[in-house]
Amino acid sequence: MSARTLAIAGRQIGNGHPPYIIAELSANHNGDIDRAFAIMDAAKAAGADAIKLQTYKADSLTIDHDGPGFRLEGGLWDGRTLYDLYLEAAMPWEWHEPLFARGRSLGITVFSSPFDDAAVDLLEGLGAPAYKIASFEAIDLPLIERVAATGKPVIISTGMSDSHEIEAAVAAARRAGCTQLALLHCVSAYPAPPEESNLLTIPDMAARFGAVIGLSDHTLGGAVAVAAVSLGAAVIEKHFTVSRADGGPDSEFSLEPAELEALVRDARIAHEALGQVHYKAAPSAEANLVLRRSLYVVEDIAAGAPFTERNVRSIRPGYGLAPQHLAAVLGRRAGLDVARGTPMSWDLIADEK
Image (cartoon, rainbow, N blue to C red):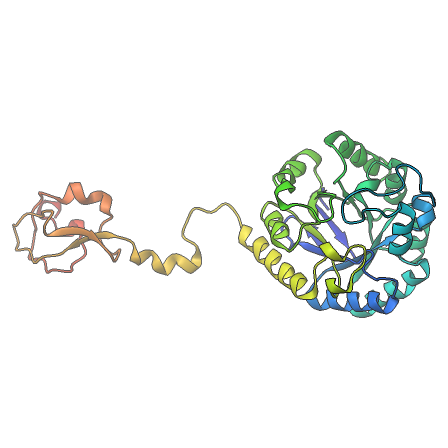
């Protein structure tokens, strides 16, 4: 397997394969496992390849504190403390086993973003087929090394990292034995403004890092993700919920089922449209070659009469000489009587016989 391809649960991802669509469940469970099941069912029905969870506890990410820096200012979660936000958003650990089982019964891959070693241990016990490193954890090189050491594919979001930090993350993963690596371009704003997407970073990342490249997208709708596929993104990750109206920490920038279905369809069409470098008429267009212009006799011409701008024109269809030969035809004489509507050919010219 090359550096530009990887496989998760048998699904080939990368060059030459359809984009891998990940539905991020994240905090959209709203504290109800039945809602989490419903999101998984809807993601499968919409055509997603995978459901991604997040595996952490509030106490593993922060402390219950209201001092400077611990209360968010501005944005979607303005005024909330980190601890309260993560307490609400966290996926209960006892849910993981039934969620993985639901994925198996549906035939959709389930994996997660671990945030510490204990989370990796839990996911390893459940047979997680891959690991995702969240953007904010991309500087946690020990965590990257820990997941890479499992031998599973590793996906790293880069939304909070500069090029040097990405290089360090890639080096850590490979140093720990990762041979199947994907990097996701990302704007870690919630929601993210489309004009800040800088999707031209995707082909640059592919050239710099020699990995499978994708997009973790927090813009509204699917347009940016589809555009990313046209630039070579092989993985698309979008937050997903059954209904934004139901609320929750991530609902505002999550896709609903009809939108995810459209994204899956449009992303795969965009991938199919990439094709290869090709300068000839496409097979479906070959029949229309005859509709191009060519030289035709447009008035009856007697043998020996000259071909002129009046009796020879460039018109459709395309069965005559190419228009570029008009100057070479004009002034020559007909070698036989030529009827109006005859495609021009060299055989009609007297001195060509």
